[in-house]
Length: 121
Image (tube, rainbow, N blue to C red):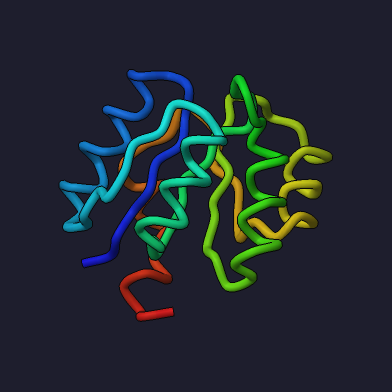
C-alpha cells in the first residue's frame, strides 16, 4: 500500500482519484485544492506519489512540481490535466515529474501509470 497525495482544484477529480486509488489498495494521505496546500501536505506526509493538476489557483502545478522537486528531489509526481499538448508533457517531465496523465482516464490507465508503486520503486 502506497501513500498518495492528490492535488487538484476540482473537487470531483479529487474524489474520483481518491476512490480509484482506494480501489487499487492505496492510502490517500491528503487532498489539496491548490499547489500551496499541496506543497505543505507534501512536507507533512512525504507521500509515495503525488497526483498533481497543472491549472490551479494560488500555485500552478508547474510551480508546485518545481518547488517539491527542489526540496525533495526523489519525489514521485504524476501531472494530471485535461490539456492534451506534448509540449506541456515535456515541460512537466523536464521539471521533474515522472509522467503525465490525461483527463479523463480509466481505472486501467491509472493502474498502468502507477504500476511502479507495486514494484517498490
